[in-house]
Image (cartoon, rainbow, N blue to C red):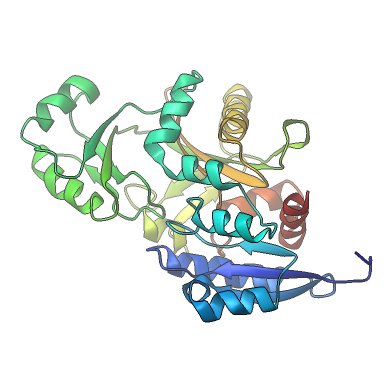
Amino acid sequence: MSKNKRLHIAVLMGGNSSERPVSLSTGKMILSALDTERYTVTAIDTQELLTPQGMSALFANRPDVAFIALHGKGGEDGSIQGMLELLQIPYTGSGVLSSALAMDKVMSKRLFRSAGLPVVEDVIVPRGLDLAGLPELLTLRLGGCPVFVKPNAEGSAFGCALVNHENELESAIQNALKYDSLAILEKYIQGMEITAGILGNREEELTILPLIEIVPKSQFYDYESKYADGGSEHIIPARLPQELTERAQEFARQCHLLLGCRGMSRTDFMVENGEIFILETNTIPGMTPTSLLPQAAAEAGIAFPELLDRLIQSALN
């Protein structure tokens, strides 16, 4: 390829998941920041892509790299990655298996546990389960309420609830099960929420970004806290002792490698009484105006356009 030839980048955004608005915001941020002297850029709403006309347009104007700006089911779970593999189009972020594993919290937590990593204790509730004996099970396994309820494979805090009393439990579970066939009930960790970003493909070339401390205005880091202007305060670097900082960053590195992530990942944690608990790993972190990964990269001296360049290069590699 000629050095003077601009790469054609297709930014895949939108889609059909509950996180469509977040994806559109991420996509717009990426579109506005990509260097038009280096790239020819096309925006594709995958809601239109998954039609005969949309597929024809993709084949007619085949991109050099697909920049995946999708969140949630159909975009972050390996589905779109599988389609791009079949089309032999390089794409940003993790592959099919890594994406599917990270999106499935039950499976990724099993993987983390098997590697000896600290995860939050939980109870799994499948759709259709008789909930009659659940309070007793929660008391036995998690010490009772409060517990945090969330869908197994969903993002942006959709379907999540903090349950302080048993009489709130059933409605919280039913709400979570609107989004997935499994609900996860986790022991509520009342402490500091932090997140650690990782850039790169292979172990020897990983960049571990500064930790961010998240201070939500709500009871927990819900949708409003994530995306509303002023919904949360982000403190960089997180106010932790160096030893805990390094431990969290090492856990994030191990999660990235265990899942086989490529390009980028962001692992979320809770810290309580000097102990760190892994919540989940995100393979396509948000790139909205309030998103965490670009803020951590900026703290490390990586401006947003440079971050996008690195992700595109990771895809080509």
